[in-house]
Amino acid sequence: MKAAELSSEIELAVKAVQNRHLGRIKALGVDSSTIARLGAIQPPFGVMDCDDVGGGIFQPGGDKTYIVQPVFDSDTMIDIVAWRTTEPQKWLWRTGAAWALNTDTIAANSWQDEPLVIDATPLDWLRGGATGLCILNWDAPEIRTLLRVQSISAEALIARQLRGVLMKPLYFPEISARSEHRNAA
Image 1 (cartoon, rainbow, N blue to C red):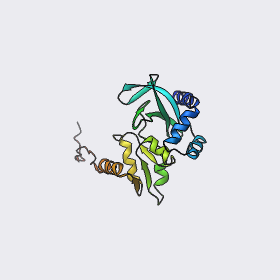
Image 2 (image 1 turned 45 degrees about the vertical axis):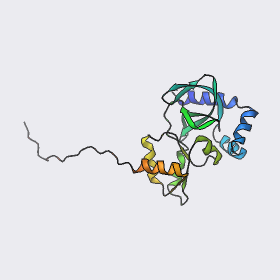
Image 3 (image 1 turned 60 degrees about the vertical axis):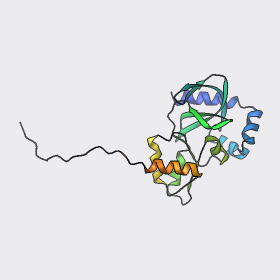
Image 4 (image 1 turned 120 degrees about the vertical axis):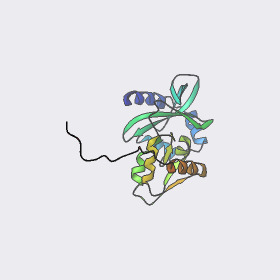
Protein backbone atom coordinates (compact mmCIF):
# COMPACT_ATOMS: atom_id res chain seq x y z
CA MET A 1 0.00 0.00 0.00
CA LYS A 2 1.36 3.40 -0.96
CA ALA A 3 1.76 6.40 1.34
CA ALA A 4 -0.77 8.35 -0.74
CA GLU A 5 -3.42 5.67 -0.12
CA LEU A 6 -2.69 5.69 3.60
CA SER A 7 -2.88 9.49 3.62
CA SER A 8 -6.28 9.40 1.91
CA GLU A 9 -7.58 6.92 4.48
CA ILE A 10 -6.32 8.91 7.46
CA GLU A 11 -7.72 12.16 5.99
CA LEU A 12 -11.17 10.58 5.78
CA ALA A 13 -10.80 9.30 9.35
CA VAL A 14 -9.78 12.75 10.63
CA LYS A 15 -12.78 14.33 8.89
CA ALA A 16 -15.04 11.78 10.64
CA VAL A 17 -13.99 13.00 14.11
CA GLN A 18 -16.90 14.61 15.92
CA ASN A 19 -17.12 16.46 19.23
CA ARG A 20 -18.17 13.24 20.97
CA HIS A 21 -14.94 11.59 19.81
CA LEU A 22 -12.87 14.51 21.06
CA GLY A 23 -14.75 14.36 24.35
CA ARG A 24 -14.04 10.63 24.68
CA ILE A 25 -10.32 11.08 23.97
CA LYS A 26 -10.14 13.89 26.53
CA ALA A 27 -12.05 11.74 29.06
CA LEU A 28 -9.38 9.07 28.55
CA GLY A 29 -6.72 11.55 29.67
CA VAL A 30 -5.45 13.04 26.42
CA ASP A 31 -4.82 16.77 26.78
CA SER A 32 -6.26 19.16 24.18
CA SER A 33 -2.84 20.78 23.80
CA THR A 34 -1.38 17.43 22.69
CA ILE A 35 -4.03 17.07 20.01
CA ALA A 36 -3.44 20.67 18.86
CA ARG A 37 0.37 20.39 18.86
CA LEU A 38 0.30 17.04 17.06
CA GLY A 39 -2.30 18.37 14.63
CA ALA A 40 0.07 21.14 13.60
CA ILE A 41 2.57 18.60 12.24
CA GLN A 42 0.49 15.53 11.35
CA PRO A 43 -3.05 14.18 11.65
CA PRO A 44 -3.37 13.53 15.41
CA PHE A 45 -6.04 10.82 15.17
CA GLY A 46 -9.18 9.87 13.35
CA VAL A 47 -12.09 7.48 13.68
CA MET A 48 -12.89 4.69 11.29
CA ASP A 49 -15.00 1.57 11.14
CA CYS A 50 -12.54 -1.27 10.77
CA ASP A 51 -12.64 -4.96 9.98
CA ASP A 52 -10.05 -7.21 11.62
CA VAL A 53 -8.92 -9.45 8.75
CA GLY A 54 -6.49 -11.48 10.87
CA GLY A 55 -2.77 -11.37 11.46
CA GLY A 56 -3.07 -8.04 13.24
CA ILE A 57 -4.22 -6.31 10.04
CA PHE A 58 -7.39 -4.27 9.49
CA GLN A 59 -9.16 -2.91 6.49
CA PRO A 60 -11.65 -0.06 6.40
CA GLY A 61 -15.23 -1.18 6.87
CA GLY A 62 -16.77 -3.46 9.42
CA ASP A 63 -19.09 -2.69 12.27
CA LYS A 64 -16.72 -1.54 15.02
CA THR A 65 -15.39 1.99 15.32
CA TYR A 66 -11.69 2.41 16.08
CA ILE A 67 -9.40 5.30 16.87
CA VAL A 68 -6.79 5.42 14.09
CA GLN A 69 -3.40 7.09 14.19
CA PRO A 70 -0.91 7.55 11.38
CA VAL A 71 2.57 6.07 11.79
CA PHE A 72 5.47 7.84 10.12
CA ASP A 73 9.02 6.90 9.27
CA SER A 74 10.71 10.29 8.94
CA ASP A 75 8.19 12.26 6.90
CA THR A 76 6.56 9.30 5.13
CA MET A 77 3.39 7.68 6.42
CA ILE A 78 4.07 3.95 6.46
CA ASP A 79 1.10 2.60 8.36
CA ILE A 80 -2.02 3.33 10.36
CA VAL A 81 -2.59 1.84 13.79
CA ALA A 82 -6.17 1.22 14.98
CA TRP A 83 -7.38 0.63 18.53
CA ARG A 84 -10.61 0.73 20.47
CA THR A 85 -11.10 2.99 23.47
CA THR A 86 -12.45 0.02 25.44
CA GLU A 87 -9.29 -2.04 24.73
CA PRO A 88 -6.40 0.37 24.09
CA GLN A 89 -3.85 -2.39 24.83
CA LYS A 90 -4.89 -4.19 21.62
CA TRP A 91 -4.25 -2.67 18.22
CA LEU A 92 -4.26 -3.53 14.55
CA TRP A 93 -2.15 -2.28 11.64
CA ARG A 94 -3.28 -1.27 8.20
CA THR A 95 -0.13 -2.62 6.50
CA GLY A 96 1.96 -4.19 9.26
CA ALA A 97 4.97 -2.04 8.34
CA ALA A 98 5.15 0.02 11.54
CA TRP A 99 7.14 -1.19 14.51
CA ALA A 100 6.69 1.92 16.69
CA LEU A 101 5.06 5.31 16.96
CA ASN A 102 7.44 8.28 16.84
CA THR A 103 10.64 6.49 15.82
CA ASP A 104 12.28 9.84 15.02
CA THR A 105 12.63 10.37 18.76
CA ILE A 106 15.25 7.58 18.92
CA ALA A 107 17.80 9.53 16.89
CA ALA A 108 16.98 12.76 18.70
CA ASN A 109 17.27 11.06 22.08
CA SER A 110 20.49 9.19 21.36
CA TRP A 111 22.55 12.30 22.17
CA GLN A 112 20.39 13.70 24.97
CA ASP A 113 20.87 13.17 28.69
CA GLU A 114 17.18 12.59 29.37
CA PRO A 115 15.75 9.06 29.13
CA LEU A 116 13.71 8.03 26.13
CA VAL A 117 10.15 7.54 27.38
CA ILE A 118 8.42 4.42 26.08
CA ASP A 119 4.66 4.34 26.43
CA ALA A 120 2.76 1.05 26.65
CA THR A 121 -0.07 1.81 24.21
CA PRO A 122 -0.93 4.33 21.50
CA LEU A 123 -3.41 5.84 23.99
CA ASP A 124 -0.67 6.16 26.61
CA TRP A 125 1.53 7.79 23.96
CA LEU A 126 -1.17 10.42 23.40
CA ARG A 127 -1.70 10.80 27.16
CA GLY A 128 2.04 11.36 27.57
CA GLY A 129 2.04 14.25 25.12
CA ALA A 130 3.01 12.22 22.02
CA THR A 131 6.69 12.88 22.67
CA GLY A 132 8.00 9.44 23.58
CA LEU A 133 7.91 6.16 21.73
CA CYS A 134 5.29 3.43 21.63
CA ILE A 135 6.43 -0.01 20.50
CA LEU A 136 3.78 -1.55 18.28
CA ASN A 137 5.61 -4.70 17.16
CA TRP A 138 7.81 -6.36 19.77
CA ASP A 139 9.15 -8.87 17.21
CA ALA A 140 10.45 -6.26 14.76
CA PRO A 141 14.22 -6.28 14.21
CA GLU A 142 14.21 -2.47 14.33
CA ILE A 143 13.63 -2.65 18.07
CA ARG A 144 17.38 -3.13 18.46
CA THR A 145 17.87 0.51 17.42
CA LEU A 146 16.90 1.29 21.02
CA LEU A 147 20.40 0.13 21.97
CA ARG A 148 21.61 3.51 20.65
CA VAL A 149 20.01 5.56 23.42
CA GLN A 150 21.65 6.28 26.77
CA SER A 151 18.65 5.45 28.95
CA ILE A 152 15.00 4.47 28.71
CA SER A 153 12.08 5.18 31.02
CA ALA A 154 9.05 2.87 30.92
CA GLU A 155 6.48 1.37 33.25
CA ALA A 156 7.67 -1.83 34.96
CA LEU A 157 5.97 -4.33 32.62
CA ILE A 158 7.28 -2.60 29.49
CA ALA A 159 10.75 -2.23 31.02
CA ARG A 160 10.91 -6.00 31.76
CA GLN A 161 9.65 -6.89 28.31
CA LEU A 162 12.11 -4.52 26.63
CA ARG A 163 15.02 -5.77 28.70
CA GLY A 164 14.17 -9.33 27.67
CA VAL A 165 13.94 -8.46 23.98
CA LEU A 166 17.15 -6.42 23.90
CA MET A 167 19.14 -9.01 25.83
CA LYS A 168 18.30 -11.86 23.44
CA PRO A 169 21.47 -13.00 21.74
CA LEU A 170 21.74 -12.30 18.06
CA TYR A 171 22.03 -15.20 15.70
CA PHE A 172 25.36 -15.31 13.91
CA PRO A 173 26.11 -17.69 11.08
CA GLU A 174 29.09 -19.96 11.36
CA ILE A 175 31.99 -18.16 9.72
CA SER A 176 35.13 -19.97 8.63
CA ALA A 177 38.33 -18.61 7.17
CA ARG A 178 39.46 -20.18 3.96
CA SER A 179 42.95 -20.36 2.61
CA GLU A 180 44.14 -17.47 0.50
CA HIS A 181 45.54 -19.85 -2.11
CA ARG A 182 43.19 -21.20 -4.71
CA ASN A 183 44.10 -23.90 -7.15
CA ALA A 184 44.17 -22.63 -10.70
CA ALA A 185 42.83 -25.03 -13.30
